[in-house]
Image 1: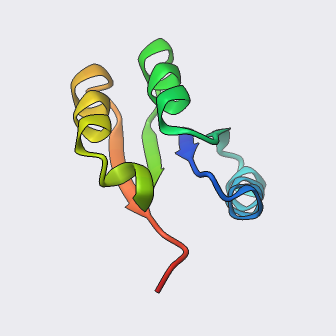
Image 2: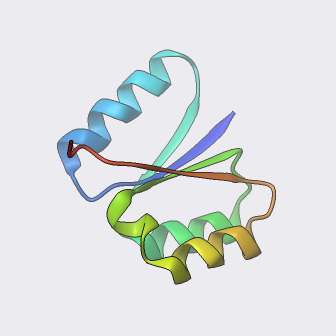
Length: 80
């Protein structure tokens, strides 16, 4: 399973990446939504995980959904 993560918090991105890779997932991490969008349009991902900051930029989500239709898109946040 290929997973794309868009997360601007470097420590959180590293933690999530290490956890997923330890379970044998293939993970690509991008620090900004535009880079992640470009990667999602150039490669196929099974799952796209967006930091809530990116998720609520509706145009970014629309782009992911329209350009990478095979990917599931979810949002995550480190804030309670």
